[in-house]
Length: 211
Image: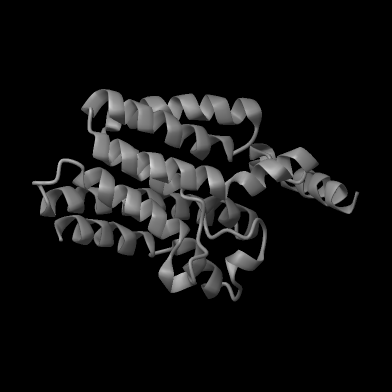
């Protein structure tokens, strides 16, 4: 029962989606524009940088809150923090209140890592920023980050249950990003440089889409 309640808390936190709420306040559904995902990167594309930053921070700290609350309420569960954080990620990706069509889980993954260990978060963030900017694609960050964090967690804690939970999350994140890698292949995936080269990126994507 404690495992179920801990997972449910995380999942419910994940269902709170600021990208979707902001888009509705703007008069549209973010899942019908841009990349079609209710997350920070698509908010940048469809609404703007400030809104995207707010969404990213909100999604990070909802996972932090879920993780810490799970650990506080269920101290007997060694993996409570990871369970709640992981379910927050899954709740963000598959929110019941949005018919299971949410975001990709990057920011909530970051929040789960931050709640687990701030030092690991900072080190992994630095590595992923270098990787992401060198490849100029956001999608490589959650895929590699989820795998690397799973390995780090296993090495630090030796907890097989938490490691198994994170492995499932990593597989889900990989599955959700398959379409991104397909768009990279055909040249229609937005680069990170979209942040400062918006018009050029829109023109490039449109040209490749038309071709």
